[in-house]
Length: 112
Length: 117
Image (cartoon, rainbow over all chains, first blue to last red; front, side, top):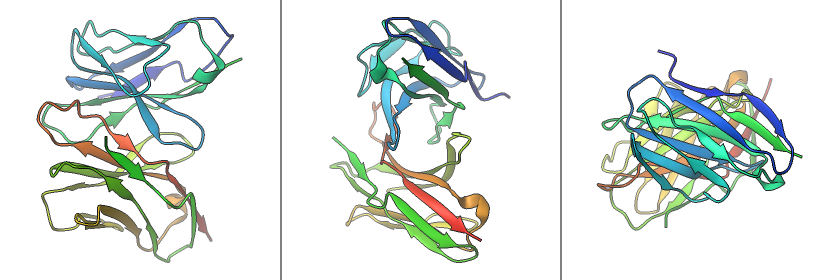
C-alpha cells in the first residue's frame, strides 16, 4: 500500500492564480482531512470528509474548496491565491474503526 | 472548543539522557484520545504514541512513555535514552471520541527537540 499520497511536493504560485492539491489514499478510509501548517505552528483543519459526496468546513476554510467524488481522492482547490495561503498542506485519512490518522508527505506552497 | 497547549517552544537533551515534553489541554468531554506526533525535517508526520482517556494506565512504546493526568488535563511525553534521530518537532494532539464527531485532530504549536551528541 502507498498509504496517503500528495502531489505536488512543492509549488510556487503568483497572487491570483489557482491550483488544485491532489490527495489519494489506497486504504479504503472513509474519513479524509486537509490541514495547513504555518511556520512555527501546529496543524489546523481546513476541510474534512466523512465519505464520498460528503464534505464540511474545518477551522480555516476561507479561500479553499474541496470535493469528494470517490473514496480514494480528496482534492483541495485554491482559488485566487493570496500570500496568506503560503503554508505546508497535509492530507490525512482515517478508517472508521481506527484512532490513528495517516498523513501524506505534505505540499509546500508559496504564494508570491 | 478544545485547545492544546505546549508551553515549551524548544527543548534540548544530551544523547542517552531522558527528556520530558509537556502538554496540557482543555476540554469538557470525558471521552477522547491524545497523541504525540513527531515531525522530522522531512515534514512527515509520524505517530509516536497514543492514549485513550478511559484508560488509567499510561501508554508506552519502547523508549517513549506518557504521563497522563486526566484530572489535571496533562499529557507529557518522556523520551528515555535519547538518540540523535529523536531530534524533531513534537506535536501533542487531541481527538474527540464523541459519537458523530468528525474525528479531526487538534494540535498544539509544537516543541522543537534538539539532541546533543
